[in-house]
Amino acid sequence: MSAPFLQFLLAGLTIGAIYALVALGFSIIYNASQVINFAQGEFVMIGGMATVSLAGAGWPLPAAIAGAVLLAAAIGLALEKLAVDTARKAPVVTLIIITIGASILLRGAAAILWDKNVHALAAFSGDAPLNIGGATIVPQSLWVVGTALAIVVVLFFGRTLLGKALLATSHNRVAAQLVGINVRHVLLASFGISAALGAIAGALVAPITFTSWDIGVMLGLKGFAAAILGGMGSGPGAVLGGLVLGIAEAMGAGYVSSAYKDAIAFVGILAVLFFLPGGLLGRRSADRV
Image (cartoon, one colour):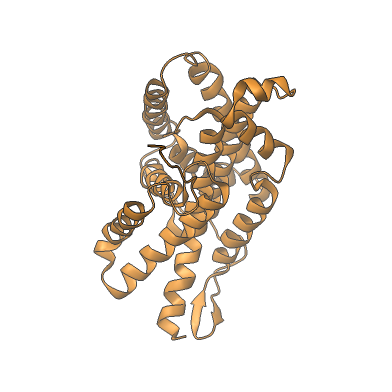
């Protein structure tokens, strides 16, 4: 394996892990409510900006990250309780529009509460690069990949009681209620958990890409693309889609041009979905004729 290829691969795995966390947030909410939460990217922004703000105020870094995650989770719970739950009998399209409005509101509030500048966060364990097979990687990348892996292990769909409750609710709410699942609590928890995942991603990526009030727009779009690529509603698919998207971007930027990395990634997604409309690990369906 050549050093340049390994370098691009490591870069792709790093950003792909972030996309995977964002995509997992999309899948959690979709599984519970069939709603696509387009405010997911703003939770990434809140996680990064709040961590920078709290760390700048003198909080220890672990406490600043925890505070940012709790803030994002609280906002996620408020979004579900005050907006989505209020309109729960409305069509799904209406609920999606509500999340788009929430995204715009959160972005505007962030610009007022903080500012419109780009902010940097100190790396968790230094900036000295590590050499792996002729390629270099910064320690922060290991934090990103390691944390994402740990979260996937803990929250893997179908492996925990919450995961099973989410899946049961998504398949049949009435049946889920009949077996004792509190559907309302599941829906509320899905928004809180997805917001927390977004905030963790925002804090992890801030030392690498920096953070700003509008960073959530593109990260949310890429996370949504990863969720679609892997199969919306599939936890493993969200992770796989994020990694595939990240690696595709890195390889496109390295071997073609960084100016076209977004186009290369999305063209690849369209090609996959042309042959697999349900995504890489999505549900397969058939029509009886």
